[in-house]
Length: 116
Length: 105
Image (cartoon, rainbow over all chains, first blue to last red; front, side, top):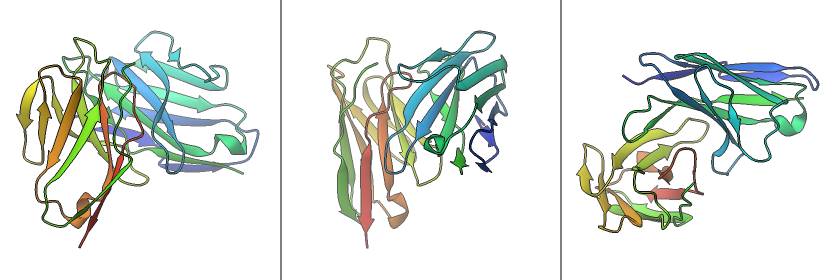
């Protein structure tokens, strides 16, 4: 149980285009979903936290107009990278939490974004 | 967010027990401590979670002292496949630098 999927697993796009990444909790309802970005050899950096039906809370330094997050249902959250540039190339990982005691996060497999 | 501090890297040999300690001096009363394992180009994988004292599952043990300002992940008899980065997490979202464990033959 507690499986989180991401789609696509990798994507290559041209500079200036937008890319949408989906995060789904397959067998549980996620009250909270998190989006992380990870550069090579570095730790996960939290970008934003989203609760179903509410606006996402972005971490300091993360542009909310560039990284659009939608958490429309208890099983789906999307991250859209708008007007992507080469510096946005990274490994994007989502996680989901049921909000139960312990707040354990279940992580997706990640999405590798390469912007040319 | 409670900041965590771990050793940057550790080396071990197959069959040995490995203990990785994480410091989290600002842990909140209601924070649980969770450890994750991450392989390159994969999402983190849950290892173990605890609140206080000792927790054990089929892959690891977690030791938490009474003041909860630190925790130790214990991996018994590591194998080459345990080479990965290990993170402790004590509050939503706050990943530290992690510990890169290298298991040698």
